[in-house]
Structure formats: C-alpha cells, structure tokens
Length: 194
Image 1 (tube, helix red, strand yellow):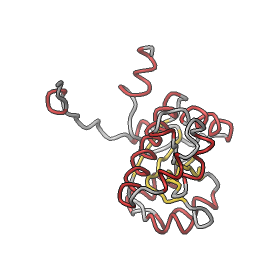
Image 2: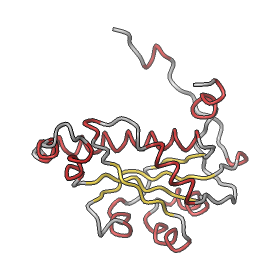
Image 3: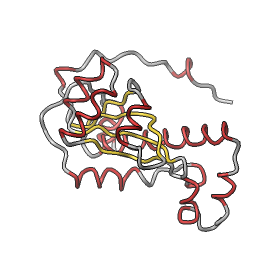
Image 4: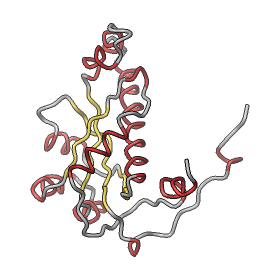
C-alpha cells in the first residue's frame, strides 16, 4: 500500500458529521460493493446485507428511526448505508463455499447465541471493509449506532430476513464540521506481543 493510500484510508481519514452537497452515483455504490465483498469472513459466509438509502423519500422513512443527535448529519448525507446481517445467510453457503456444500447445514445448526455472535462478528467485519473501500474510493464515512433497530428493520427490511446492526453515512465530508481528533491508545496500552 502506498503511503498516500494509507494516509487516505486510515491515518488522515476522519469520521464525518457534516456533508458537502455532492451526490454519490449508483455506479460508485456498485464499485464500493465490488471492493468490500472480497474481504474475508469466517467460512466465506459474507452475511452482511446493505441498503443504500439515497432518495429523499427513503431518507424521510429513516428520519424517525434516528437518535436525536444523528438526525441532521444523516439527513444531510448523500447516502446512508444500513448494514444488516442475513439471518438465513446459511442458505447461500452452497454458492459461497462449494468445497463444503454441507457447510450451510452446520452453520444453521449452531446454538442461537453462537449463531448471533457469528453473524454480528462477520457482518461487522464487512462494515469495516465498507469503510475502508469507501475511503479508498475518495468518500468519507460517518458510522453510527444511534438508531432504533426495530424501526429500521420495519421500515426497510420487513420483506427480507435481515436485521440491522449499524448505519454508515457516506459522502464528501465538510471539513468545517469536523471535531478535533480524539486521542487513541498507544501500542503499549492496547497491544501485547506474546
């Protein structure tokens, strides 16, 4: 990875709360998905599903689902990605893991608590890939958890077996609305080498 790309994707990238009025076209969203879908997940399960909320009508359906502090920044973002996991992801396993066609049955038979963790863990990985891919494509991101999942699921996912876990605003961030960067832990505070 070039130093320039490392700066763009991680070192200089920021979580944005304000957005410039620059739209994101559907071709960019397709390109974003094509990049993030190749990130590794356990057993190639790729359980994340994404709803890209773009239209003014869809944004208005999202509004009552948001925590008060997330309304303005979400309504002004060109796109909000609803990251969900597919509760019936195991049905796709014959396609996703053809070397072990019975993998889906094994995953379906997991105890519910283990299965829920598996879904959350792997869909969250994919959300991270979305952020990295978006930044690599020149977009800014604003991930957030402040929303009513039941309302989002009812408004956007009622016809599919998907459950929302995270929202990520996407667009070109307004640098004037950035907060000062918060500190991070140093290596010795957060890591061990065994």
